[in-house]
Image 1 (cartoon, rainbow, N blue to C red):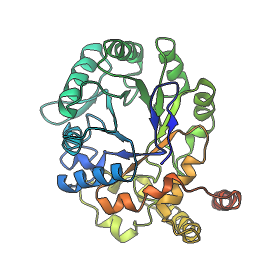
Image 2 (image 1 turned 90 degrees about the horizontal axis):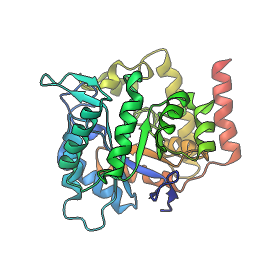
Image 3 (image 1 turned 90 degrees about the vertical axis):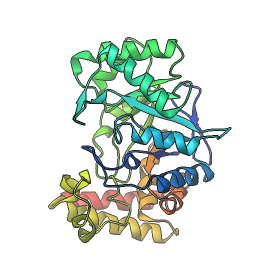
Image 4 (image 1 turned 30 degrees about the vertical axis):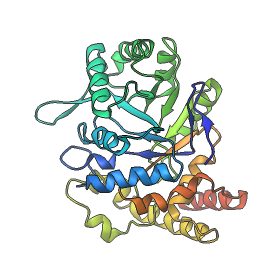
Amino acid sequence: MGTTQLGTSDLHVTPIGFGAWAIGGSGWEFAWGSQDDRDSIAAIREALDAGINWIDTAAVYGLGHSEEVVARALEGMGNRPYVFTKCSMVWDEHRQIGHSLKADSIRRECEASLRRLKVDAIDLYQIHWPDPDKDIEEGWATMARLKAEGKVRNIGVSNFSVAQMKRAAAIAPITSLQPRYSLIHREIEAQILPFVARENIGVIAYSPMASGLLTGAMTPERIASLPADDWRKANSDFREPQLSSNLKLVRLLRAIGNHHGRSPGEVAVAWVLRNRAVTGAIVGARRPDQVRGLSGAAEFRLSPRELAEIEAFFAKEAA
């Protein structure tokens, strides 16, 4: 699997990375239902065997549990992958999640992530959400100091607007942006992707398969049977009226993929990667077989005719 430089950093990342959101397990606000840690560890190792060289997690995933599972998967590994994590989403003793960009909070979060991940330095430390907006400057200045101290090697942002990135960049350079981007969430195309391309800010897109909706495994029946604590159950993408249109799109992705022996999910990820502003896409997996069914997206290229076919679908749906 080839690699591409992430922004102006010394990180050279594979086109897809392992996303560790779902492996945080149950019992928190944005859970995906229960998860077997043994499956998670096996999935991470399968991803690394496939050539993937970075893992993206966050402190809030499972309220620290995802980071702990990543550490267990990498234990004893000599040539470990890059490990990316995030700060700014914090929780209290009642497991209620809040947001903070205060300097002391980010420092505490960084130290806690270093302990859970069992690493000397975090390869890419990212502000998870620009919230509260008024504290962006304080938060980003703290991130820059953590980098200067060697606790983190690179600093990035997630879910930032162009205006917010400009404010941060006035303090210290931004290695990368992590935005939501998929066939059904294209909001970043108008302003954000042109801006990061001009500024040479790397892009690692999250939810390129729309949180599993575009994998080809979702049906109305499966969605109805999702666990009560799976956040997707209440999400509008997984409910009518959007659901029928989204599943119609999956049928098109399946038809395109069938010509190449690819899954709908691989087609969806390849579509995200076709944008030159995108450095890599985060692909979540909860079991090794899911990794095997998606890792081929890294090398798959859609033809101009297939890309036009996808655009025609959206034009027809909007008519």
